[in-house]
Length: 171
View (cartoon, rainbow, N blue to C red):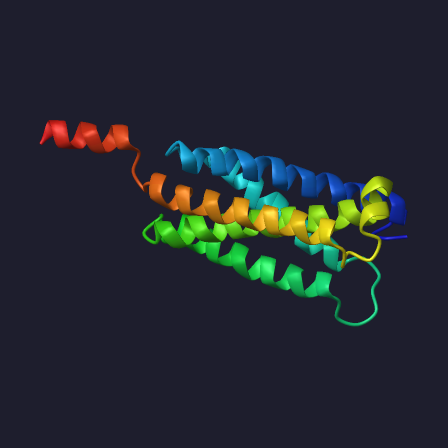
């Protein structure tokens, strides 16, 4: 039992929260690439990603595991994302974009790990996650996120371009 529910149900809720974080994170990154804030999606992304880490800490474990360490790092990155987005009002726009992309990357990294642990076809080709298919998958995800993060930093602006153009025209 976990929080009054079965471990199976708790795990399912954790996975669904994680998938919601990943899906909403993809939408937020799309907003970066198209220079749109997407405030509602951003809130869903940040909350669900934080809940993913928090619920991850509630699983039974012995000692400090790599998952616990990644959860701590993820929450630290999310704290930076929240501060730069809401408290600093995007004054540190690049830091906000990079930290948001990093938070999503951590969720996708874990998705790949869990996929290789739980999907029988993937487990068959990389049973210990030390085999080349696992490394190739993780490197591909990392390269994709580096490229998307660089593009997001270049394209996302604190003010939408239409507002900036309207201000320039009015002046």
